Length: 393
Image (cartoon, rainbow, N blue to C red; front, side, top):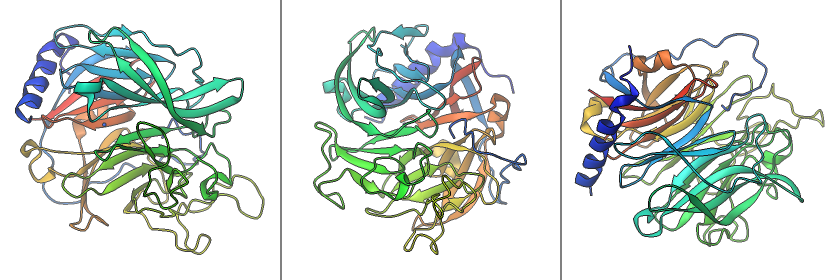
């Protein structure tokens, strides 16, 4: 299909703003792969509805994440180091911000975005980014205040940092603010074999911290530690299922086993590439209870090939028909948006499908559900990328 041109941006954003008012978020994975993975096949059943695709902004270079504020403004990052805002009725406009200490290399740079649940009052937005200082390199979460006219972001504080990063591989990061005042933060293992199973390392984890202070949440499995779950390889997505409070991580596998995991406090999800001191062994299974006793199995796995799952969000709204409530997953290597319908208890996938209209856009990084039922989507091909709005017809 041919997407509608960018000149429709104002109408599209205005429609989203009106709907919100009525109603009241693999890397370019360098892991070795000997064969091209097959496309993810759709299970038999009711097909998803057709969707429209509108271009919000084009000609971009690896836009990593995108959010839409209550006033309808779309804000997105590009990995090399820029924020851009698209206000209703306006063209994309750069947003000034102090990124002087940004570390951008390989898969790491300016990555995840998330709005504070109280954004209308505090105008706080969180970013996850590589940081380079006299103490070395790490990945961390930064809190910013947005100017009323969206012209600038003022850097307020580093919420938490120290997530390991070396060359930039597996520095991926995703942020999920929660209504209890905490942030869930997914981290990569920096391609270092001991990090995922080391409770003292912040790599290969999902962290849970107080959004205001960055301190470990008081009711964490270990109240003195920000670690909420461990045994992850490269967490690319975090999504809360509406109505249940269940949180799912979307994770990239090595040469196999991309995964969707249902997070359980203190859960170990089994990634342990350090085998007999041989270094970072990517031939091992992502989840192997024989090697990691008590490792929790995945809700969904890609199996013997990978598709590079890169984000996750839950579809909402009657426009999605039978797929309302399904988990939508952005896929890079497989170049699609994958839909997973979950069982009532949330532990298995009962049906899967794709959105064929997105197949011509190449690698998909972020999918982010909006209050009006649409999806904000970023592509991940290089310097010809786009931010899109996708809506059921």
